[in-house]
Amino acid sequence: MIDFSKEIKEKLSGEYEALCKEYEDLRALGLKLNMARGKPGSEQISLSNDMLKVITPDSDFSSQDCPDVRNYGNLCGFAEIKKLFADILEVSPENIFVGGNSSLNMMFDTIACFMERGSGDKPWNQQGKIRFLCPAPGYDRHFGVTEYFGIEMITVPMTENGPDMDVVEKLVSSDPTIKGIWCVPKYSNPQGITCSDETVRRFAALEPAAKDFRIMWDNAYVIHDINGTPDKLLNIFTELEKNGKEDMVIEFCSTSKMTFPGSGVAALAASRNNLDILKQRYTFQTIGFDKLNMLRHVAYFKDLDGVLAHMQKHRAVLEPRFEMVERVLSKELTGVAEWTKPNGGYFVSVDVMPGCAKRVVQLCKEAGVILTGAGATFPYGRDPEDSNIRLAPTYPPLDELEKALEVFCVCVRLASAEKAGK
Image (tube, rainbow, N blue to C red; front, side):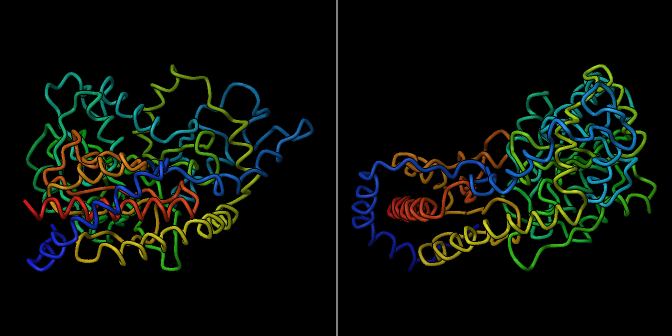
């Protein structure tokens, strides 16, 4: 939490009239800018346009284990696409299940499967009240999935090393109604935190009171670095194997922010036991996912080196945007707000004066800049401090991003001045 000095409060109060004038001038511009969601910008999406050309009517539509990818079959994906995801996640291809275009969809299906069929015990929906741990600030769609199924959410604080493992270990070991935890282990949404080696090892060594406890390891930004000092994430499956706990984690990822957000390929990595449970559901849910799209990705990337080279092109687009965020916030909000400086991912997390986040978002909206709703980064949309705001600088072009940041900073200062004057 930010500790505002008396001097800062007095300075903000003294700026109030000037800030009101500056804000009204910005509002009069009639802006229509959006920093609400972590969507790739058009420049990023266009990096993959050549992928649309790699399959032609004369293409070879066979794979190592599929005579014709245009037909039904290969529920878990064909060999080459499984190998590609296995290399990205550093697991064996036999532990990979390749799905449709959305990892969020696969997460939803996984929770639905465990609710209806269980994950090593009787179905979750037959066990009375169940709970999930939700590190916060965190990903609002994780919380939405959990709430949809009526699972009670318990907030776990985030630290600079990932979820507070003292809290996680205490809760998980003592409460059999706790069936899982969400985690974005690398470049978390929204803070951009990567789990330390110690945090990963403590996850892999958990002793849950519930034998059907599962860690939902959403590795959405596994290779999404934005500068020359990328974070390193310890492979949790290696640590699980050391402890004989391979069943405890389901890992997810997709190419949605590598190629086309609406037409990527998603995959999960899991133990054989977990895959058997999930296949029982998918066998009746579909006869196979879009293997032509899988083939398109394999033909375009060829291998992991091809993926990594492609991600360097994304870095060239994204790095200037995050540098701009850091430059503008440092100039305008030092002493007024605190923010993260991630090495990858898609977001910057900003903490403003307690009690001001909703007001900042409202002021921005009235001035034509749309942000993620205040509170969205906490379970049930309730930020106890009304302080956290998620910025998504990837979608707007650079000139629009600069203007949006200008509006945001004025709104933060104005809301803080209002609060300081009370």
